[in-house]
Image 1 (cartoon, rainbow, N blue to C red):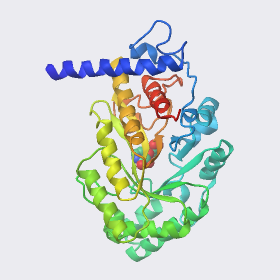
Image 2: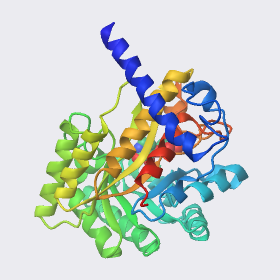
Image 3: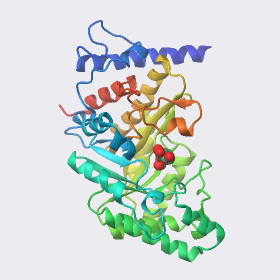
Image 4: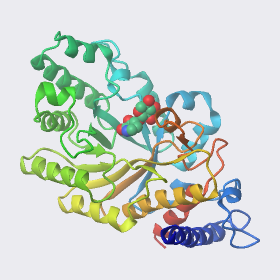
Length: 376
Ligand code: XIL
């Protein structure tokens, strides 16, 4: 009972804190005339946004990004316009993954990814590359070939080397950060038991970074994973892995924390996120929040939306509290196109804007925090 009351009190305090900067940024908008309105359910329907997120990062080192769904980009003008106005960094949600790049062995399909890179150039945006090596969204010819024994470990290493070289070379100079290896540590903080580990042994991680560096000497090369936002066994394992790779002179430049959160799980406080990022910075690495979203059990309500705002804000504040944090990317920005309902039964509403592109409290929280981080 007591903890419930404390939690509610915390929410109320956060809610009123959030209402203030939004009110000052937008007199007619959220929390405007009428004063401090902490009713999240109502405030998220107010459409007025007078300072796009990317404008709020002007003069700072931070880039604000989103994952982009290429089908939505082609079909939905509002989606497209919003990406252009709100963000100065984009990540391919799917089209740079191996199953899209090489659906048929030996036939490279860079078309959709090139479209994104061109869109980004037209809109003055940088591109994060995602991802060179993962255990999901691999082409069937590869997984089936390995499973049947048609592709031997030696051959697989050659295939991986060629993939990394081809892809990084193709985008050389047009991508600023690559997620080189994605989710290579599991939830027990061990190297993930994937076909890569089984076939190639643990040395594949260093190999992939070295091949990527050879193909583009300037792009920043990142580790990337989920559940590593704060200090825990999994982020400890990443810290140890990063240290080991650096000791071996492997060209690792950055640590990416995905940031897939849920209001039902609670969040690391911003200070803990910052401490975690700081220890990677202390190794000489850059850091980034690469895939932020904060899901909830449906239906959403005012309290969940307010808690969600806090979730986004802890990640963003954690990022802004350290010098090394280069980019804050959300994994989609509207509930209209979100991977969450398809992957987590009964959950959704994970993004900054609702299905009609109206800002939710989370959007206002991000706006307010970015505004605070701006130079005077
Ligand atoms: C997800 C995409 O959003 C979905 O569209 C796709 O079906 C599956 O992958 N961690 C990652 C991302 O690194 O690549 C995942 O993206 C979400 C979890």
